[in-house]
Image 1: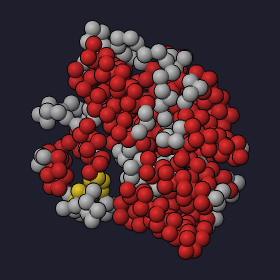
Image 2: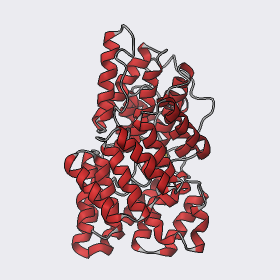
Image 3: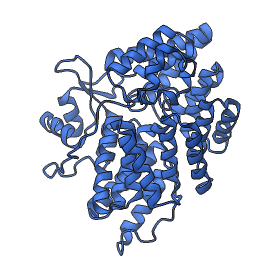
Image 4: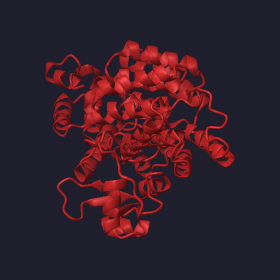
Length: 439
């Protein structure tokens, strides 16, 4: 059975029918290979569901087994402790609000900042060409490009299981899929963790593997000191690689170390001056620390010179909402949702636009909040997003209530509340101090 819009598969049997396997295999693949499924909290036997787009993307990735009888074990140190961004990305409600909740969650790769080896797969000319094609596809940051990259890196890993570069590609592509597609956080992190650890077994000095593992440790595991150390180790291994500085900078933002975050991002920008991703994250740090006009101008410039870069539109939408620029918010939110090919988010933005036309700013916010709360009731997702929306509307009591709920379920995003500009008005409020120390 599917849901009304035909994109949701309800129950193990329906998921199995869609994939072409039985329900028992689906349960095993979830445990062993990270099949992306969701659970309704407190639900019974019918509480399992899957999104068709997520399952298709998973089937295209390395993690989906080509031979179900030869399934590799996952990491012996499973890291997932709860969804960092069911509110943020996978299955999230609004690309414009949810996707950029935490800049480092986005953590865009910065492109080919370092020279790519001429023949990373030796004399296998076909593999070398596939690798170059996969890198190009990954660096498009489009939903289609990232799925293509995931498939190609998976082919390379199967063909050259002793080459770390294929596994680094799998790790980094999955981390990007969390933002630019609808892969749930727990699935993407599980894949990235497995691939990064495999890459480090093959090449202990791989900067890409070190930073990917650092990203998982910092943003998913809550092992923040270890994550920061892994970023620093990646930088030491490849000091001319912009991406390691970039991801380190966004983690420093998560710590509330704004000056150091900007310094790291500025260094990344110097190494790769053409990166829209680095420029956008620099703008987010500036907005969060209070340099709002400068940040908004920088993001508008990115949307003009790189109009298909969805994150810049998402950032602008979020900041326009904070600034009460409702027309700007609705415009950028619609663009971001379209670029991500997310029908659910597009519908939410349309409903918000209709509410704005009939009732203005307050009605628009009420529509966004109601949509987020319905999703929470259905799927137990989105506590931080709801708190953010109430923060924008200035409802202190509701902000406190939803942050308390996020704290109770240990939503990872609460560890970096200081990185979210929506909560700036509450930083000095005694009732909120514990949240800003949560990291």
